[in-house]
Length: 412
Image (tube, rainbow, N blue to C red; front, side, top):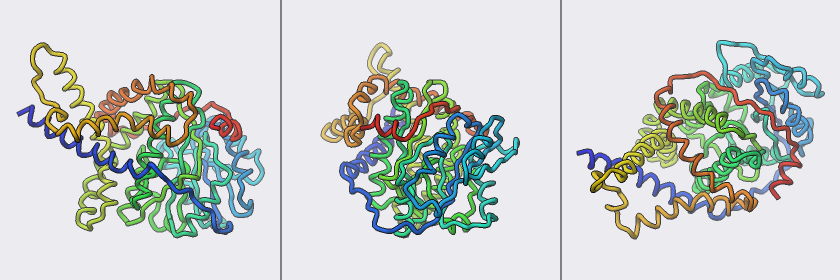
């Protein structure tokens, strides 16, 4: 019986893996985004900050040099429960609003955004759209031009390309960078090319103001970006991915910091899966909308990782035991002409994504340690499953002070 159950589970993972392989084929080529409209949309640029005095200044200098009419955007920094000099630094930049929030009972970015939006709707000036960044980010100077273009073309929610500010700092930041290059190219881009919904990434996001007022924010889980994405999809609003609107995010440089960050992500992912996966799947089936079914499958990834890692571990352990294996592998059952090419392609996806993204050649050396980072998702996911009711926000300290020209120069 256990052998049959394992084969069924492997069959499910094989189908889902094959589906992702199928999607990724539509990312081999891409068309560059075009800017055809003059800047007309006004933006409220929100920056989420909690004790970010070391890095927030670099972002503000960056934002104030945006290649977009200065009269069409204002910058608001949410100084959320800060105990350092973040607010003082923000006040040192003319025309930038330091919005201080103190609420020790409701910690986390989702609560901070919800608070800021309530203040924004009462602000004397109203804006066409709201853009959100994190304090450790750097932003390509043409970012708002791309957002203006997408809004004028009828898109209501847009996600920019999440690049890495510091992939050369350590093997951990390099692994995070590789992971993001993979997701941008082989997960986000094919969904955009096929007309499916894209997924918000927590920063580099743009929202039509009218939509935010209609829906409210209402996303206060540990993965507020994914939660808001699904709420949009359920309302037939499909976020769009803009490949050329670049945001550079700082990645943790130590394994411990990265593990804490990923644990928070997975805890939040399980929470969203528990509340939204089945309703979204059922809605997609009833309405015959593949974008919603695809979104439900995406949410299922938390369980996919958990069960997939567990089944793989059981099979590996079974192989190490003396005597004949007790369990069959799906690759021994599926036809070789199908299973072998898919297995090989799945292993080749990561370097393929790096090749398509024209990543500097030195980063390929980091593929040696990337499997360690990948395998570490297993214990993190298992622990997250048993602690998924935890809603305590764990702050990732950011200290890497870089300027935009330094980051872009290293990627040439």
